[in-house]
Length: 448
Ligand code: UDX
Image (cartoon, rainbow, N blue to C red; front, side, top):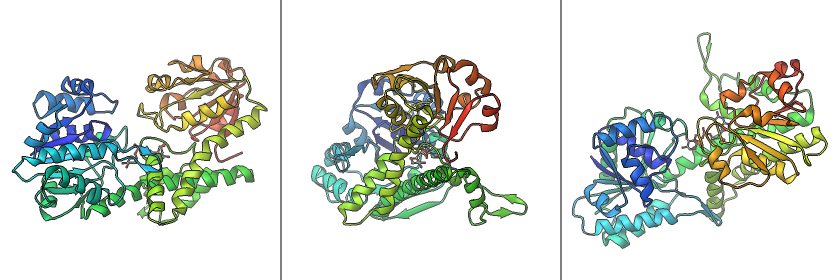
């Protein structure tokens, strides 16, 4: 099947490469000439494990090409997938790129006789596809919906795991305007033997937000309880949750074996969620709910708790050091989670800004995200690839992104390299006993 994909960010490019790998003929469209050339050169413009290997296969076999020409791509395809960004704008989701894509697709459909399905994959708030997108497509194509198909197919790709998540999804959700659109979308995913949820456009849109808001809520819940534990003293949030999850409703048993569902890892207290999805999606959902006259109490509380988490960590550090003025601090990890170079809404940046605001000097390191972080131009931060150099002479270190190489730093190194070996474990990834045994001072989220 011939498929056009508008937008080559994480979602668009992974979708394009994987659908081409599954046997479709894919054209990826992007306005940025450099990105088009990079893809056609079989290189991935983003760091995503496995993606470049697939790109090399599908571009060299001719199954995937990139272009800047939306019209040509849409004209020769049977389906166009909109995978452009939906950043947060003033008071809610910014649909600028979606609208622009819909206009160009609509214009391309004007002279096209064959049936064509337009599928929104970008994360958009409920009603966007059947009002905004449909309206623009009708206006610019001069056709009525029905003459062209309309679908909404949310993505559930985790950065760092996106190729595997696409190839082996937990479910495929297809919201469709009519039976013909659904049939075409089922053909797009013909090679996938996983549960398929066929529903309407609004439900598909709502599923995406509900899924992300649930996971974000678990994180904030764990962080809120962590704060209660810290205030109480002599209670470790990890002991608390370890016992809570032994409820069979959370960890079912098969014989003797305790099944530990992956979702429980979102109940890990830490420095708050970040990334390209959770922060933006929760705020978009909050704004959408308000606009609809609803009171998004839980969503707002999840956002507020998350916003405070980095501040609380900086305050605890300040409490331990007396003042942060002029103190040299080290931040291990800048990416919002290990396995990615993405620093969007990374808790590390919030912590760094908090440290700088209190007069601290910051030395930061990360195996993949240094260049992106440097580009932010934060005053008072030095960057180094070498974590030992980052630790040398520091009066406190904060483990923010639990990259394996940082988690495995021998306890003795902190004592050896730092002027004052105070270790703040923002992810509860370190061994307190070993650190204290080596002479370090340990502060961890969710315990005193
Ligand atoms: C998320 C969703 O998981 C994915 O389904 C959706 O389509 C896009 O948004 P992603 O942003 O890549 O994917 O990150 P994810 O791995 O879910 O992590 C999001 C945040 O949760 C991060 O800040 C991470 O540190 C935190 N997290 C993640 C946890 O606290 N615990 C975990 O086990 C995993």
